[in-house]
Amino acid sequence: MPQRGVLSFWFEDSTPQQWFAKDDAFDTAIRQRFASLHHEVRPEQFASR
Image (tube, rainbow, N blue to C red):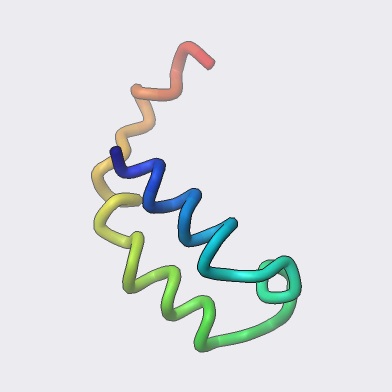
C-alpha cells in the first residue's frame, strides 16, 4: 500500500521540524521518493470526497 510508505516517511523518517522548515534537501528527498506515486494518482479518484 503506497500510503504506508508516505505515512512512514512523514511520521517515522522525518521530524516536525523538517515539515515546516525551508530545506531544499528535504524537499528533494520527498520529490525523489514520491514523484512517481504523485503522478499515478488521478483526480477522478478524489471526486467523491
